[in-house]
Amino acid sequence: MTAITVKNIPDNLYEHLKVAASTHRRSINSELIVCLEKVLLPQKTTSQEHIAAARALRKQVKASILTEEDINSAKNMGRQ
Image (cartoon, rainbow, N blue to C red; front, side, top):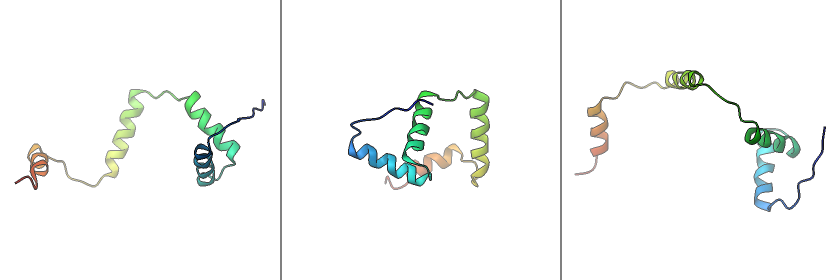
């Protein structure tokens, strides 16, 4: 594998990287690699995958279906 050195990292950016690495239980080097992969190698998702994810999220919500009347009532609440 190739090695690189990153110089002149702003202190606040380094602190964010350090916190993220700690949160994810990774070394700073590993966290930096994950961050670079997310930006440089984004994974393409299909519309079907987006729909499936939305449906999965929707199943987690325990709420009744809102009507237009419910929405308008909520918008107008406290506007008197």
